[in-house]
Image (cartoon, rainbow, N blue to C red; front, side):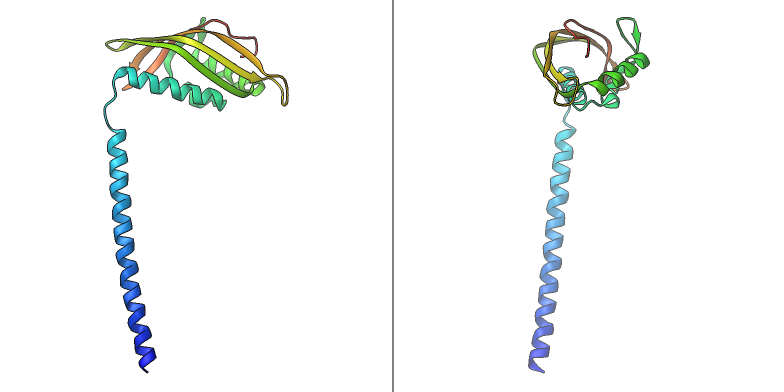
Length: 167
């Protein structure tokens, strides 16, 4: 009987301790979540927002994500008299061919005037056009004209020199 009672008492103590642990751990996770949410809500300058959009677009290119890249283009985007929907089709074909895409940007400048901005810089893209094929390289300059659209900076017009035939 003593062991039975003692065992029940220990189990209740352990149960209370586990409950306290989960309450404390849950509160710590909640506070950490609130902290990270608050940090992400810290207002960024327009230049920082455009820089983040460039970084996201670069990641989308490297992942060969048409939708990831298209989210950065304005509804009326134009590139060499090519519409936004035509650009999406071109990207699908390019991403079908290109593999192991890596982009490096440098010499970037971002100039913001109200709701309009321009970003310029240089790029180096490496890629393969066949599995296990040789690495090909394209280098050049880019200019993007931006406009704030629904609270987000979107590329309205793009100009890039040095793009190879496959990219």
